[in-house]
Length: 537
Image (cartoon, one colour):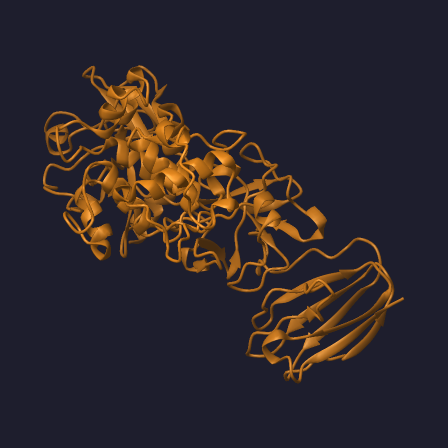
């Protein structure tokens, strides 16, 4: 395992020639592969159209509603325009929650119960509530011709969908639009129950999508799977494991003759990947034998001849030179002035919110629009990071969010490119994940004013009442073997004026007080007997 970890770290940081004694085939140079994300494919097919700004990162981060799912169902059945033109007056009781165009769609669905959209009871459709993976895969199964209670039961949707090639978002729970992009492209690539065509071909016949876009639905897909021992690694669309060869060098394959017979090369002209992967990591090389081969982070990709079915990893660690291709959705970056901080696998900066508490997000509504949540089920242990530090919470709306040391992770909507850190220090409550600090929950103290320290010890605040100057800071440090935090009494709007994360033993957090006044506060888990007052002059 130590040797494997070392090799994976090498893969993530750039490759050196493994041995000058080995023959090195001269490639014609690596060329950018034709790689598109799920969202790009869905957008070009026209089956996912986004909001007024198109399919943006902000749109993909939004929760998916029942209304959106219904529209996508109609689009995939070639019925969207028919529904929009429907003039019926009978409608669901809560149709007023949507605009006029969507009212027509709801009326059409009510008039056509055979389509399966019969509402949620009491004459309501509940158009703005969220959608789960189980619900959306039911939609896709019906779009390709399968019927609930005839071909599958609702309880069995996820299992049955997997047999039809629909499985990538099965563990997502409540969905965001990014999940919908992935699942929808799975759906258009699926074969109809009757006729042998794919849904994409059927939609082209019906002129729902342009005929010249159908090849997009035939892209080879590279997926990521999880294993309790191996972590996350790459597989092809059928689930066959992909490997790298430790004796290869960047953009060059050294595997030929009998080696190539035992380790067939992987190549795809056009590749589709999930949005959490970086399309630029995939390239194409030309081998010495003239064949093309796909590379990932510069390393040529292979199959193993003894892997007979999806999920086989018989090639792992063969001769200590063949390994699965590890993947992690998180990485470390560094910049002068910030040091080392956390990003996703594409280089987009991740942030934490000081008003959150451990394993609980306080960012909803407009906050969430500006600070889209980060979630991935593929967090492994790249260099300098430990998978054990990451976790998953379920938000109040049912969607999942990744945490680091218990703190929920977010993007910033104004970060447009990899390496942008425009969210750092926003409103003195948003910060990058500082990997150079022993504890991520420690916040930089303000430059102005005096600095005060207050221990939390023996289930009490060391100075229950303290007077400070405006612009000063107080650093609270937990000395107990229990979680504590510091929360102000609620304001008139029902919100806390200030709040720290949950602090474990020896963790600290700094609050800045700029406005004169008297502020009472407490520890939320021990509110009845842990209270204090801060007087700001």
